[in-house]
Amino acid sequence: MTSNLLLAPRQVAGRSDLLERRLRRYHPRFQGAVRALALRHSRLADLAASFPALLFALAFPRARLDPARAIAGVIDGRPLAEAAAAAGVPLWLRKLPPEAFAGPIPRLPDGELFRRQIANHLPRSPKLTPTWLQLVADAAELAHEPVAVWIAREFIREPERVKTARLRSICLWAWFSSQPATLGHDLIERPWTPDMRIDAARAAASDWLTIVALHANLGRKAIADMWLRPGRMAGYEFMPLDSIAAIIEEAKAMRNCLRTFGNSLAHNQARLWSIRKDGERLATLRIARRYRDPLPNLVELKGPDNVEVSRELWWVARQWLHKHDLSQIDIGQFDWGTAPLNRGSWMSLWRPYWLAKRRIPFWLPMTPSRQVLETL
Image (tube, rainbow, N blue to C red; front, side, top):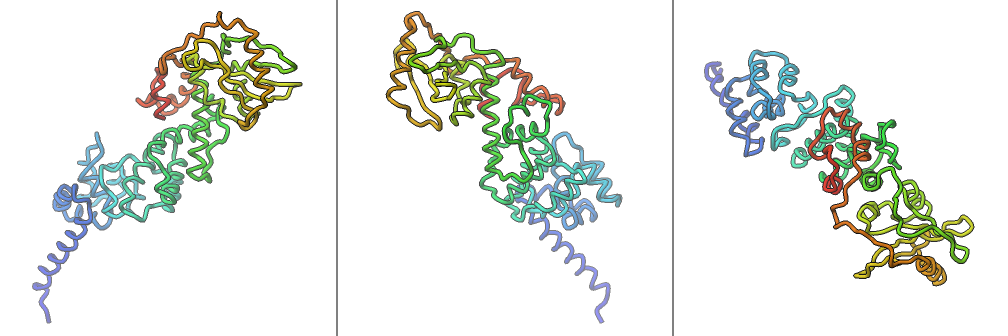
């Protein structure tokens, strides 16, 4: 019979080998610190098997988070839930393997409903997990927990289609989708819902940002100087598209991209007109300078769905244009990128978000910024 005295060293050696195999599963860059912590006490070492995320978080805590209390709790044999709470680690991370962690674990949501839902969307590939964790954390911070669950699901479905660079705009649009008493919500044509796929959400968020940019560029007042006067020519009526409402209405009716002209209008690069006959919209006209010509020109004239219009309508439009004394029209253009955004619209758009989040993030400042709009 083998002596228990002979088994003890073998058991110790076996546990040591098992621990080492577990520690080697952590990212090579962090193994040293994780190993050093695990070797401080057997209960800390046990975390490598029972709660790999907690051991990692104690070895590499988030900024401004002191792990000392959580470490002491583990050593004292306190419930892991207490140590995890002290370390800011949700219990639902227990299911993730050591390979999942390639940097400090971000602050993650941990509501009761969220815990039940996120369990269905945990990544199977350790290589994808760091990106998945950051996306979930960012979506919860930028929007709310339902969006975090949604982005977790979409990333698992098609990781190559979830672009982190577009997450802020999608999360802003999704957040305003649930805020009906805000201007940002009023500008949404297709709101976020949990059953949407990522491509549809990206397209809807992009459409919303286009309208947001139109409001930021033009504000609530009508364009005072349309360069030309409304009028009639050969039975056709020329109507100014001099406000956000008029531009959006024309864009919907004519199924064109007029909503993207906010920058051009704000910089005095163009003016937009609607051509109608007997109340029917027939074409949309863009007036602008052409090449080095300082006078207004007919630059674009398109029918519904951007189809080409007749030679007759071009001739009528030119006759209407030349009814004006073009020599007296001074198109004072701004250098591109220098036209100021409307501060009132900017504040009205983003104030509800700042108040709800109790902060003004650097990427969405109080001062109106074209660079911010372009990078959202």
